[in-house]
Amino acid sequence: MKKKALSLFSVVLIVLFSYAMSWGSGFGITSIGFKATGMGGAFRGVVDDWSASFWNPAGLASMDYSEVSASFSVLSPRPSYEPNISFEGFEVGYKNGIKWYPDDKNLEVPNFGGFVKIGKWGGFTTGMSFFIPYSAKYDWDLYQPPPGYETGTPYPRKNHQIDLEVLDFHPSIARELVEDKLSAGLGLSVMFANFLYRRTILVPTDPQLEIERPYENFPLDAKLDEDGWGFGFNLGILYKLTPKIQLGISYRSPIDLGLSGKTTLDLYSPDNPWLRDLLIYKYPGTGIERYIRGKLFSQELDEEVDLSLPSDFGVGIAFMPHERITLAFDVNRVNWSRLEKINPRFLVDKIGIVGDSIISPEMLLESAEKCDVLFNWDDVTRISFGFAFLPLENLPVCGGFYFDPSPISDNTLSPILPEIEDKSGITLGIGYDFGDLGIGYNYEYQSYKERDVMDLNDSNQDGIFDNYPGSYWMDAHISHFAISYRF
Image 1 (cartoon, helix red, strand yellow):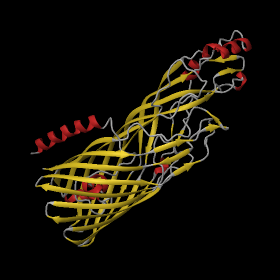
Image 2 (spheres, helix red, strand yellow):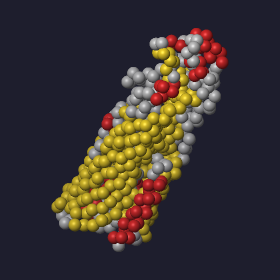
Image 3 (cartoon, rainbow, N blue to C red):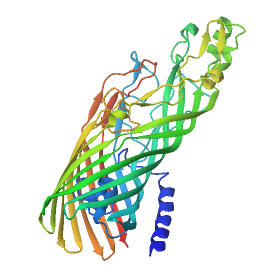
Image 4 (cartoon, rainbow, N blue to C red):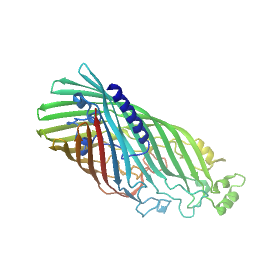
């Protein structure tokens, strides 16, 4: 039986890993476990299935079986963004005044998770879990060089992107400390992440060149593509206040993912014969005019960055007024303020004449300085309410509501990760158990407040704006299909 369980675990793990590289459903994932998802995340005081390894590992102390679960979510997020980006009132290439949507209007997101019980020694339950706790995928077409800025190479259509996948391998241990009263659990997070971040940067030419609009900025397509590992832990306790009321407390540690990979920088120079003739006349013998021939200058740089994931502290209470009814309430604090910045090698130097020498785009790209991509997010507190009901022995029904504030301020808000405002969510689920096999369906609706950002912001004074002014709107409809197997 143990060999069969480990073989099944290995197969599911391989399938999970192959899917985890392609799809995303939001930065912080709370749809881990069918019942927890249906209850709106109010699960820290309940934790009566495999997903306790994520929500509160103390719940694993009472697990006397292994369980694997596969889910398929169809997300219909409807973020929209109407840019309003200009420099001193002049258009610079952002498609202002038009409502834009990301490429992926419907996301089909497969996910797998589970807890394989390894054994029970000295009252300790041990096992291995796996799930995807963080994920995001959005592609936008927001920029095109302004009229008059002719390039020899078309500017890429997908010019603002994020693609983040974090996979958590999670060995856990739990024990009942006081019979039918108090349990505690501990898990180790071994995380692997793939991270792609892409945006357009407008690189200013040297003022000494006296180049007029629209050539005062050269567009740079900057793409960071990294992967790497990080380690952390979570722990929890579960305490029965009375036979019908139990309290759950959990803590998830912060994790720093050490990522390495490549930063690709593509600089799109203009093609203008008149401007070339002018530069030859004004700066004879310098060769500066060769950078106004519509060529694409590219450089690929090795890079290492840290991606800081937040800690999470939560308290949940569950009330069972009847053996078939559970009511739950959760509150948790997420330390998003740890996510201050990442440091890809973005080009920030000027192009053109510096003193008596010519600095070419090639030289600039080779010696590109680090430029902070600011997040500067805030800590937030989420509240969740949920219920579970068994109208029939094998027919679970659940529902929930949650309120989840946005951690992003106007100073760093962008459509690349459109967590645009505080959101409210409503969930409703139904399942059916066939003995060891269970199936289920959850529907989730997320409603966001609209948001208008008025002014460009450059917090670190590096000459590159950190936010995207304009109008933001979003809601989302999500269908979760799940199947689980206990053995």
